[in-house]
Amino acid sequence: MLFLAGCAVRNIDESATLSPEAKDGIMVVSVSHDDEGGRGLYASFSLDDDGQLVSLKEVVPGIAGGSEFEEVYGELYAVRLAAGTHKITRWSLHSRQGIHVSPAQAPDPLLFTIRPGRVTYIGNLHMLVGMGENIFGMDVLGTGHAIVKDMHQRDLAVFDANYPNLAGKADIELLPLGPWPSFHGSMNRRTDPPPPVYIPPSIR
Image (cartoon, rainbow, N blue to C red):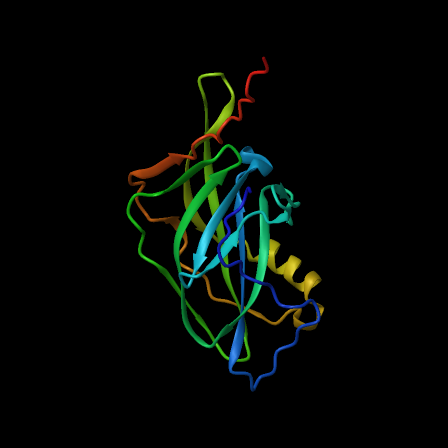
């Protein structure tokens, strides 16, 4: 499997509407990673500690789908949430080769507010990717770092096209922009052990 088996965040239906009297609202956010990493990587951001926002989704086990953006690999999310304060709590970066990168110390959470009956765009969660080489000269994931960007012109154009009933209704209330965390601290980098190799018994 390429992707985490955690609780995937689900988008609203394409025909979704939002009543001004609703007790919930809709969060709009994009998640992306540098094109250098290709489709063999994905970035993951945790929503409220139990939902995963990923930069590429699986269409079938082990196969990543396409990107919603041209210049990077990424996904746009439109998620219905209860009104009130929510948070993005941590990030990680994963490769098809089984390499995983995350901050050694969890960064301070990014807080945002969902208002009842409103659509709120909070920004672009983007992963900067640093590639390296293994001993065989093959490209492998080296490191990564998360950054929050304002990509509302790109993202809201996609949102308006995907959700015509909500087109033009998004408020822009951005997360704090810039690297997250603001300093580039130490990273945890681990590699999954290779699968066991089956050796058939010898035939006499």
